[in-house]
Picture 1 (cartoon, rainbow, N blue to C red):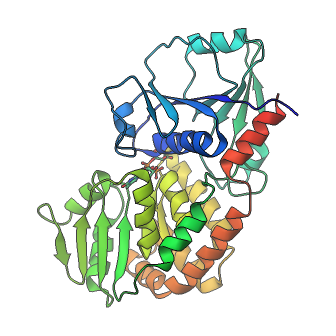
Picture 2 (cartoon, rainbow, N blue to C red):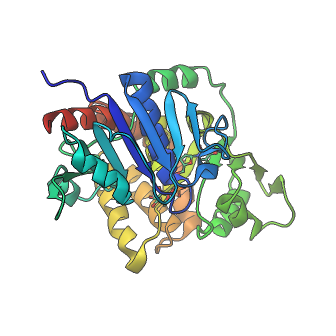
Amino acid sequence: MAAMQLHWDIFCRVIDNYGDIGICWRLARQLASERGRRVRLWVDDLPSLQPLSPMINPARALQSAQGVEVRHWVSDISVEYSADVVIEAFACELPDSYLATMAKAERKPCWINLEYLTAESWASDCHGIASPHPALPLTKYFFFPGFAANTGGLLREKSLLETRSRYQELLPAREHLEISLFCYDTAPVGGLLAALAKMEQASVVHVPPGKPLAAIRQHLPGTGPWRHGNAKIEPIPFLPLDKYDHLLWRSDINFVRGEDSFVRAQWAAKPFVWQIYPQDEDAHLIKLSAFLDRYCATMDSTSAQATAAMFTAWNGGEPDLATALLHFVENRQAIAEANRTWCRDLASRDDLVTALINFCASKV
Ligand code: TRH
């Protein structure tokens, strides 16, 4: 049996928002806490990690948190050794000095480019492809998270679903709808507010700071909380990563965005609406429809139509948002049931950490 690949280095460059660091932090701490790996997380922007993990001190270039060694990644770094596995998150480009250390290692590291999540079918074809370095004796492998069996899977902690189920069993019954709203400031929030204000069922909308709150404030005066017809709109603080899961678990409908909150909403097994990260030339719309094709295929036709219409309207597409929301809310019990099945199906596959460990062990 091959020796365990003990040392892992994860490199993360924060482009914008919280997705890049959210995913890298989640991966790092799971490798450390569940798999006993010695993980160094190199991040170029420590202040972005701090809201997700308040124990992080953004002023400290070297610190340890939840079993992970967190290092500030400055332009060039000097290391005594390269790790057994090196994760270059989202093509962030490893420093030349580190590449040179990798090239000199007696046993070459398993070098992974961790890609963004997509439901498109080409992700299965490209998952695991090798790319030899043009000049150095090193090979990089493309690792694609995904929904299909022949991809790298999704990040899922070992006891996540049991913990979530226990939490949800204790939730009190209530008359009104609890909604969490995590979106970009381009989301059609005005339409959402107007529809919720008029809806027969009362709602409470929890809005984190940053782009979601900015989007709300384009439509409502002052700093909130607001009463808007039959809806109450409540600003909330940015929650640490695990507390954010709790918000998703206890809400009836979760508006999520990007990548990591989108995945967490699926593990929450509650109806959710996804705002996809916008890309040039509307490339994201292909990604959105690839996901809808897979996801809605598991639903009855009414739920599938309601879900597709709601996702499309929320991402700036044709259907009228108020009508889409109404259908979505009307069908939410059936959509919730479909989500529970979807979640169970996804969880029957290897999680991303298991897939990654197995993949890297096979490359020794
Ligand atoms: O912040 P995002 O829009 O990140 C995006 C995407 O990852 C996108 O693919 C990438 O290209 C771009 O960043 C650069 O959305 P995402 O992916 O959901 O990340 C948000 C993270 O913030 C996620 O890990 C959950 C976390 N979070 C909290 O921990 N607490 C909170 O209160 C909230 C609202 C989020």
